[in-house]
Image 1: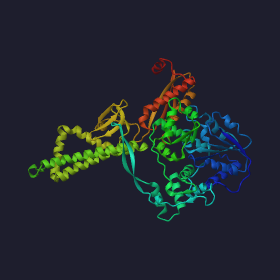
Image 2: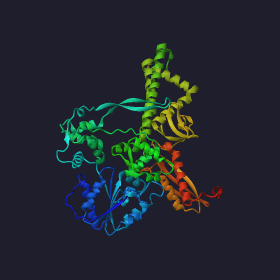
Image 3: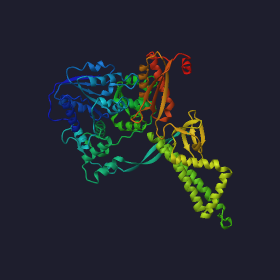
Length: 348
Length: 270
């Protein structure tokens, strides 16, 4: 359900968010420019789970003017759903704008109306977009021209991830325990790659040498320097999650044996994605919105796709979760999915 | 002029013959193994499929070249005079009937180094259209849309124009053509066709690979065409078919009709 709120808060001098200080400063500058008469719509763009909503919460709390906030969680079918919230507040914050279009014939009408609104109304629109939806819309609709200020959220640094994750705990609540296994992790190891012999209808495993990139990167970055076990854990989390907050959270909770955590428990995710084009296309749709209702997915896909079968496959492969009719991307699978879809050219 | 009486011909013993055959066999097996590995890897390389396959013909010529050099220099141990004689014999052979084979080999080298097309490209050569699956020493093999494997002699590169639809990239342009009745709303039809293209699971759009939708008016009908890139040239026909099917389904909902029977013939005669 889409949610609206009105914020009357006064400016708070200090930011309570971890990271994104430069982005917050850029947004403040744009708001100041708007108050001086410039039309500076903002698009905040990032991949799923990277903290857009946290940033938008922070912005909402820190702007001097009254702002209306609208958070989309399902597809918008009529522009009136947006126009009805444009009240006297001049600043409009719209979260998850990827729900303003649907990838089907006739699915761009609301977006076109919305883009007309952004240039004709006397409002400033602060919007957030899923990176993959934005890239798609940029290629097919040249959407960036409507948003003079585009802010791509950077990946979080290891110390920012640490600060964010540990902010949920008291000081010294978590015990960081050094274990032998982490020291013995090999730089090069053998992995089996399944190879199907179609003529014999058999699959054999071919061993390949694989370089452990995480160990390599950590070796390079540390340059043999002595690090604490705490730093080691958060470095590993940072490398595996590629600075993505959502993925880092999953890694943390998977590894945590409360109140203890060990480096060896921070394990890389491995997904062997072998799916057909229809499954990949549906996965691409889910990636572009992070979470979508099954009914809406069926509507986009059309009669050509057997959605139940496809979702069953994607759930079985551990790429998405399906709860109460809602398909959600699994954070731990995010980077494997993106790599696969980029390779298949379903994500641009 | 070379005096043949002064040239000592190499001792062509059974061992020499067996060694030569062995070298050719090793070169052949090596090529087969490398081709298999590269083809297998390329199919898993996604967007880099054709880039990986580009290496195959180059490796083939290199390995066969090294094998030939090894046989001539190390096994037969030909002197410079003997090489000249060998060249003369080869020239005579070409003159007497090997010229087509020789032209094919030279054609193969030109294809390998000049790259008018690559393994994995979709090309039209002579009467044939299809995906290049192999560039060999003598011929280029294509798989046609009907799944026929056609061997086209390499020397045709010198005499025939070759059209490569994708020129070494995985994506290729597909033109989708539709005809609608003159009374139908052409603006709405263009919008539907555009959206059918950009929402297709097969489409690829980038700054260098844009799409366009065009309209042309004829006396009794209108011609719509969409030009867009398919994300993998192997889906060329599926892309065209899927966009056409979805467009017509949407046309039907919006009252956009096909030209009346025989009108198109009449239009083309005017």
